Length: 90
Image 1 (cartoon, rainbow, N blue to C red):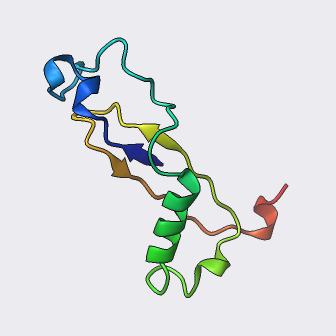
Image 2: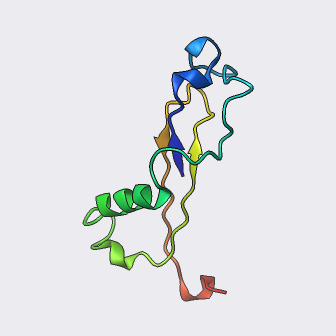
């Protein structure tokens, strides 16, 4: 999950904080800035030789890009990784 930092203009008084997002600010699902596939590729490439030998070993991927609406809305990248077994495939 890619939580994109919100611009100051999205906040009341241009000051980030809990409950300070303007009512007319875009929602979480807003198609701005980086492409989600490029963000995912960056993370996968960064994990080469750290978590796996090569990102070719990755067989499933789920990625979402949202405008951050948590706390100070500074943005973050959340990565959840697990092994996939044959029995997991429907």
